[in-house]
Length: 273
Picture 1 (cartoon, rainbow, N blue to C red):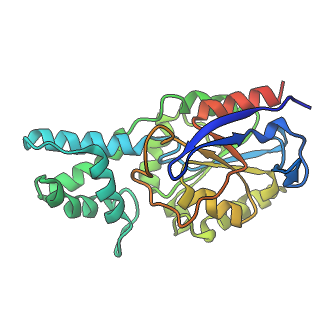
Picture 2 (cartoon, helix red, strand yellow; picture 1 turned 120 degrees about the vertical axis):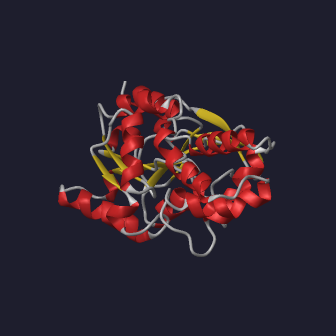
């Protein structure tokens, strides 16, 4: 058994907490020594991943594009304010699939930011998705993890955008499910059911899956309700609030918690050594 390990993280709502790396404990029931535990990292066969926000820096991509439009219009904008307006518009009634919906979103938020309101700028924001960058640790961490797990992408983005994201990440995925493939978006359980059916067709089950994501609303909460072991990548650990991601009705304590993909890959390496 490995020695006691811990990682200190910051939750947007309540400051500092201690988050335990469950790989430091023997697997078994969720209650062990008074701490929730589940399977150890080497026991999983699949890792399923949220893509936008977990692996791809969509907040940075949105802010960069909006800042470029603002500079051309000689307007100063605040990036976090823009994300807050984006979040409200993105999850309003009448939303389309992502990132096509960014045209509508831009036309909604542009007047509030003092930006030009022509449709061509909304199309520019949508098309910027093709150039969004991965987080600095994403591609390397995925390459390391792919040596031991089947990596499956689960993204609310449309297939055309995912193809750009996958290339940016080094095409590490064994399989991929997009909004076009599932006909829905997370946190709809039907999205997860499509993935469960695929894994079942290979003679495995959701017990063989570790679901990895940054969004409490889209992934961590629903994955817990569906009985998945989950891993929260807290990308905004050094920032306040939820940025461009909708705030969950309640916070779900994850099974594993890291502030980076590199942290997850490192933990796997230690657990398998």
